Image 1 (cartoon, one colour):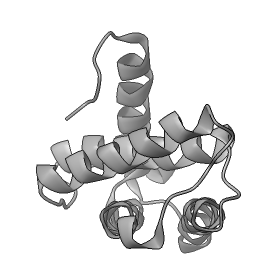
Image 2: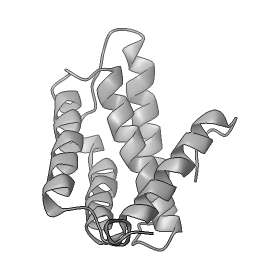
Image 3: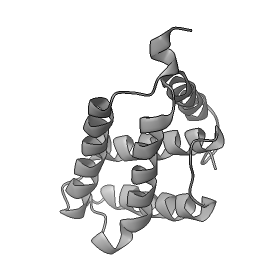
Image 4: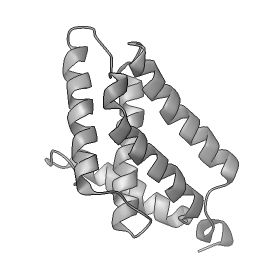
Length: 131
């Protein structure tokens, strides 16, 4: 394993990723979300879970369950052409996105790659959620 795999991602990379997640969430707050933005948020939450399982910080499982419920509502409303998440519903999602930002700042690149592999495996499974 090379040195680059043993170090965390660069701060610039982490800022870019974090900005993407928070802009996606901001789009939902204004009713301008879409499936791609929802997928970005969901992937970040799943990565946070798997990195948490690997020992890189964490929040209580209930926070993930709350975030999942909120995102499920957003996805179900999309069938009516409504892509919105109310501002009052955002704190659990924000808490996990902030955790994931901290994780990316300290977890080595190889651990993030392993978490991404877990997300892919989960996506191919019949499970409802990784938590």
